[in-house]
Length: 517
Image (cartoon, rainbow, N blue to C red; front, side):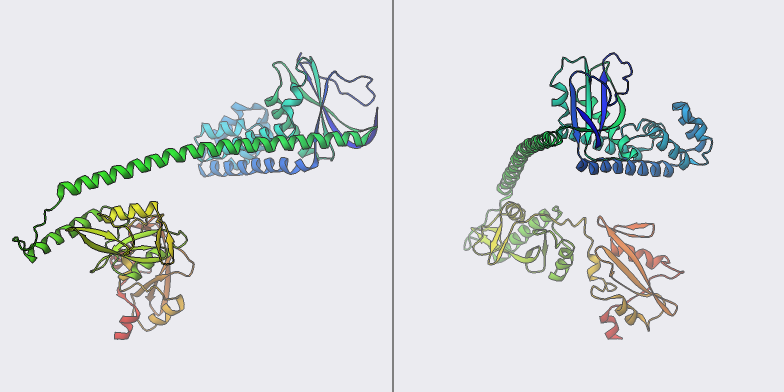
């Protein structure tokens, strides 16, 4: 027995014969066989709002991409009418591409139907918009699957597959507005279809009626139980997905580790073979070998080491001192273990965030080996040493760090650090003070106060100092519409060509130059 109340539900009838179902009122004496009640709680309102926002974002980005693609207005009108003649009158009021797209969105698109906007994107080859549409479709499919699981649609509709006619009642404990109700019915129609609608069936919203059962608490308890079961089922499915995903990742990681081990073994084997082939037989002193011959052999080995290192991206032959290495590591200080190898006139150094370790050469039975401390293992080459510490931690004093990210010399152009025009610790105000008495074309380069990968050229033009910004990206430097492979190349270019107001870069300035004046 039912009584009028403030409880809402939507009655949806599915008929196999394809005929229209009639509206069922509260005075009907009988209900169709096998009704299915599906509770739609107020907490789900936010979920439906979220998919509406995703749809709106997709339409906004697609419209913007189509406008930027410079689609011909007349061709767009002609194509749209060919696809949907029903909106021809509404298109008569359109004056540009944007207004045509608005008509398409308002009259031909819904949460579950983006066919016309997709056809426009495909016809005019707007590839950027295709990405937004595909992303939305994937979100919609995932949302429908989630709703189906939440509402247990598959279980409810398959509970009695022999029914010739089923009625699905969507029970609301809240009052959605008309727009949200339309969104909900669209999604539920698509979701129900995904769950179980048999061939020949169709779904029709009959009416919005107010009902309250005689045993209100019984219904609410039933809804709560269904919600709890759905939540448990969703959590179990999520955990199963996580377990499956983790298993796949572990298998992939295992295979990847096998490949790394094989590659490292092959590399070590290759280098050992090469060392055996190229081994120099040392003659024991007293049997004819002179100190000059020993020196030549050592120089030859050093040249071989340098030659092999020059092929490695992490070896920075132009970085000779600790400040230069620190300048490189500054940009990678957020990555523990990021490293380079450098060399000064005495020895090689391993520099990583945030330490500098000398690489010592030791003579082991006439062969030069390398190590980073007295208690650490030695290696026949610096390359082998680096490979080892990419796999195992460096443990020296308070240091415990594995090498992680090699900083490639191809990504960092730091020859500018030693240039007379580069001033690492000069601010905008200090630059103006340094240049205030200098002539036209005097300049310096400094880091910009705007932060990472941004620099400024402070330049004297007339009686004032101008500050021109440029940016670093992917190992290159950009200023305006020009791109350079290094900062030195950028400065050299503007020494030959005007950079601003017919002024070229002429006289480099730094604190040392000012002191000498």
